[in-house]
Image (cartoon, rainbow, N blue to C red; front, top):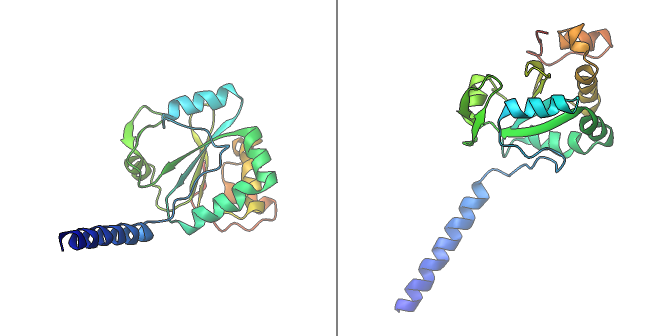
Length: 186
């Protein structure tokens, strides 16, 4: 009888653990070509600048369908991958993560607190930083690959210096501007 109760208890615990795992948000992994990071963005900016690249920070979260689409479609598109690897050091952090970060101004915070400080309210959010650590473009939400490539070119060609309003930049190229909050200050 004792053995049966013991086996029943083990079976219940296994079932509970499996049910809990099924409720957990699906993990979304960044591509292998993203840089490993200690989340010290001062160092990340310096390394990107030394390589004559911009830093691209992807802010996502597990279970986010638009993050999944970004990773599975955009980050696998050969044109996107080629441009990103050539012109950007890419890193990620989790909007609800608990790892410690150091922002470009030296402020320390958890990933979640940094996301709140940067007013990241949606995922995915992509921030592109120049060699000084200034955000030169921020994309809130998902962009289809064709529009995403335009954003990559806007940053890598430093077109933000002449046109700090990305939506106006898109419009000048005949592309509809749907996303808000992409204005930058050079």
